[in-house]
Image (tube, rainbow, N blue to C red; front, side):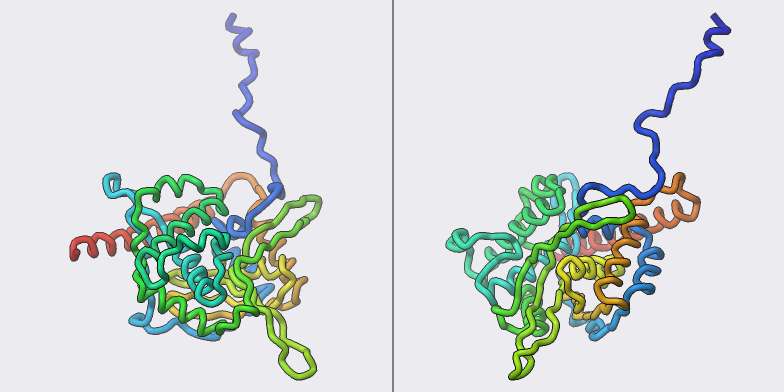
Length: 325
């Protein structure tokens, strides 16, 4: 009996064996593609393939639009929800609605317009925020978010703040509705070595350039990625550039409504440079090299701690506001 037990081999590890090398999913959303990558890797790719011109620095602190980044979604359980993406969507949607009379940003059909509250009311903002939450949950696939926010009043945004945010976008893009397209679908099959995937997403704004002279010639169309964040980041740069590649554009603008900072991103080698950039990001994101080394683990932990501390800061601001109220 003892000899038979000794001859038994150890069981295989559970799950499928680890496949090393590059393995791309069937489809990838642009937002997911640029998430959870070490900033050091992103910085190297950007330095190699792109030139960033910082056209407008951040405004002084007192001129920042201080909408909350995080809101209390369930007071009884002390659950919080990050809402920067909702802030950005609502800002663009409000600009589109006032300029073009449409709401393509949130994919809202015209027959819903009869139930939209007056645009100068708190109800209008709550209505937009709720639709933005549902839209973003559908696009990202994070459907539990709808349930987590179902009892929220969507009342963290003030009319004066939304008006200021809308006016900032209008100051950058003007009010020529005929020359602006909102929430533009961008997708394309992309190959790396023998791997193939479908890149897909929605660009915030494409500004169609009007004729520049009597000859009818015009400057290049531009893509605008609108953010409402504490600061612009490398992942925002790569997201905007990926949309530009998928849409065949090379004039790329990144704008932070919160503080007025504006960057123009110029690929060193046009569309080919953008293609190399995307390939590099996909290799970094989806290549399995085996066990994570100590430095990678420490860097990952440090990044998570930084994200958590930023949430704690927002929670503290909410708590202080509650106390003052």
